[in-house]
Image (cartoon, rainbow, N blue to C red; front, side):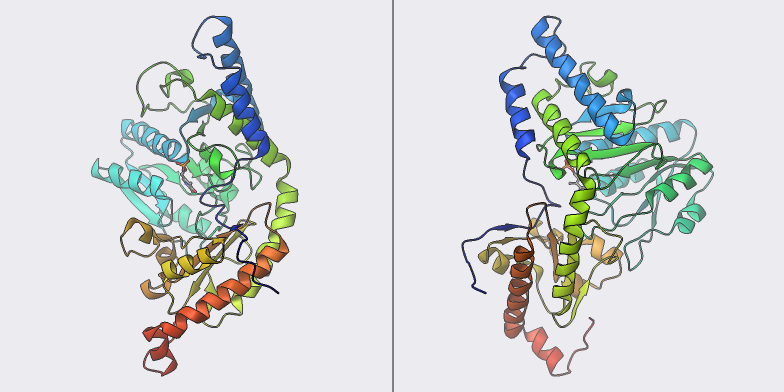
Length: 401
Ligand SMILES: *Cc1c(COP(=O)(O)O)cnc(C)c1O
């Protein structure tokens, strides 16, 4: 097949998604027509207030929550921060200062945990093993009388592995410990029912499900007193100050309703494409899939290639019109490999050669085949220049993969 250089394949849906037409139209409508401040008493303001409350009910309905349990935030990071700080404040009041999480959480969680450690909290990070999954019996064993919070992500943003959330939640419930989940990667892509899944608090972000950036929500079960991390006016039941981002929230609710309505179709379409991509990339010598092959998000593919530098791989794929990610922190100028890959036991050298491709609704089988050919070509080319690869070939170095 021809190598069509002009095409662009967006395969970084875990980083962000393109806004849906419905979300864009909703956003524009509320910017143009319903511009009032929801806190104002005149009709123009009250129209915005009514819309906001309708959006809250819509979001709540998708996850089987009560509208009063939904707090709009500026995104996933803020929701994560507020959930953890709130649970810590509640725990400290009872003299409970132990928190359980995992080593491969998003930095919005890990950095907040670091801050809490400095304030005297003790944090246990559960292992996620080679398959990228928490073992429920290990959570059960880690819970102590002074544990105030368990926070475990629903699905991982780098390797896509999906935790047994319902089971983990049931363990926490039985032990009377608050259970928070960062569901940013799962929301709109997997069915979520906060009641059935035993979830006390949950974070979500609109831009990961075809809504706008800078908009998200925190679900907190009735009776859980939140601590403000933004002080000011009495918006969001007094728990999150600041004039509500009405157009963003309306677009988020529309995008979530849309995504939730087609979860089955989305999964049925993406799962075979994901598996085709995994099968194709597995044929590249000395490569390995990261994370469980089946218990992963329908669109997530993450590989390591021996003797490859992730950044070079990304640049050459960009030349071929493929938008991908390494999942590592190298973009920030540091050479630290991904904490997620290290958490599943990849050694530094191998973790540096990672590639994450996250498919979306628009991805076609042709795109997948083009990605397989392109990655194979680029890996071969990079290896042909690589002194490490030469040493591996000459037997001066041992293959890891
Ligand atoms: C993207 C992401 C976040 C951060 O969400 P923002 O809305 O970008 O702040 C948090 N957790 C996970 C798992 C994510 O993928």
